[in-house]
Image (cartoon, rainbow, N blue to C red; front, side):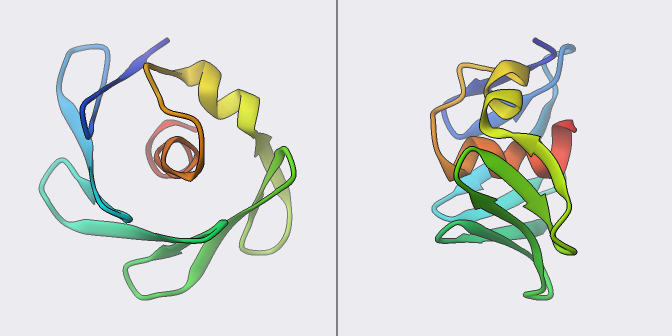
Length: 94
């Protein structure tokens, strides 16, 4: 594991906060909104769809499989199940 989830923050191996969840919104380490979760999809700051979860797999905006839910859970220690951990994985880990 190179990333750890503590509270609403995602931290790297050097314990620096790289992301923060506020409700369904994701912010980077500089508190800029980078994405929003809406159902099983993730949208960038310009409201363009960048990721979708279907079944156990993660697809990018052009419908290419880029990983699985298991991939996301393996890379973030302490991650909760569901779209929040997948969204953080997609934006900051993969």
